[in-house]
Length: 144
Image (cartoon, rainbow, N blue to C red; front, side, top):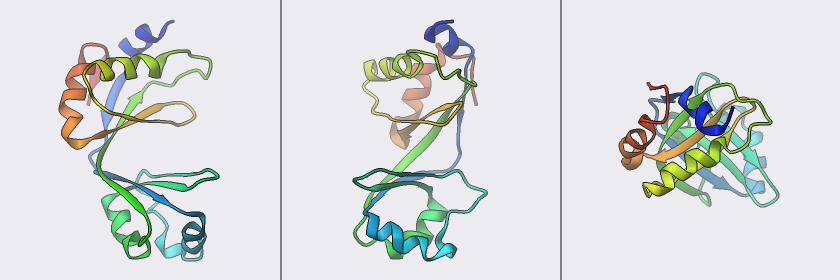
């Protein structure tokens, strides 16, 4: 099955929370690890990605507020909504996110792509969410 056909079987789910992307240096990250009370709630969706340049956190507003006093040197970008493509994808699928990216690029909508093991996600700025859902609406099975 190609990417366009898979997209037609996909249900889009939008999380109700507003999310923030946070970039911190490794020293700040290590100091946070020493404070378990600052960990994200296990009932909220979150992401932690560490590479050699930075640690990126994706947090909802509640978890962000807990961490803010410890993030004096952080880069913070607020106002994202998390869009999930609720279809379990085989890891050999080619072009699924490329097709989604193409549709949204043609509508001039910036995205931040995220992938979990079996599903893909996008961060979309709140002000672009309606336009993104309208753009993708005719290409997916349903939107919730």
